Image (cartoon, helix red, strand yellow):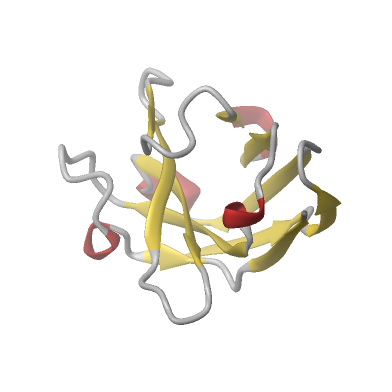
Length: 125
């Protein structure tokens, strides 16, 4: 099993920045892909960004490309999401997720086995 714990959420004004962290523990070697998803009230959970751990290749949703950056620190078993130029529509609960395998369907929630508890991000206008 892999345990994921997110931190770093909060309230920020539009145009501001936040950095989310996702600390992994347990059988971390069993994960091949890490992702960030978000869910706003009344909406489905959606893909935000992903990273393939074998080579660090990154993937982004169209809505976050150019504003968000996903990265990892292997020594700390931690994945980060740097969010810049935040907009009110970025308001959501953000979840960290881990998948056992790499897949071209990296943006699909069902690909991920491990999930954190989520952290709230609120962007005021």
